Image 1 (tube, rainbow, N blue to C red):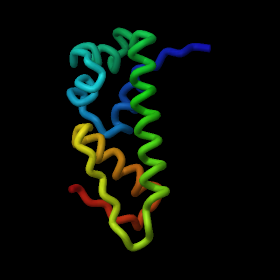
Image 2: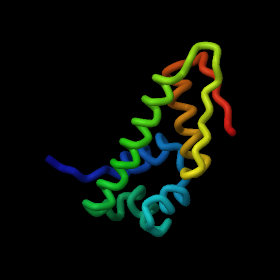
Image 3: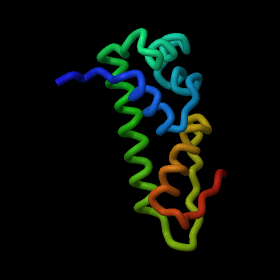
Length: 108
């Protein structure tokens, strides 16, 4: 089984997480040029960075599941969590609204 990610998969994962290249690079501890090269297909993430990227995706998935499960009809869901960049929260909001079109989302 091939565990590498295509350039499109790297870019799509970043967009799904709602992160800019700069934000994702900060979370992964890599240079922006490295991510740019991944997304252009010049290089692929190392096994360790591939795992880190998938771990961020899994964390985002889990947070989406938690927020969706905790959401109550007619109540507002808050996406405040200081640890992550703004784009992370935008991605969460988008994923919640995709599942629950009538949800109310606010930033704190």
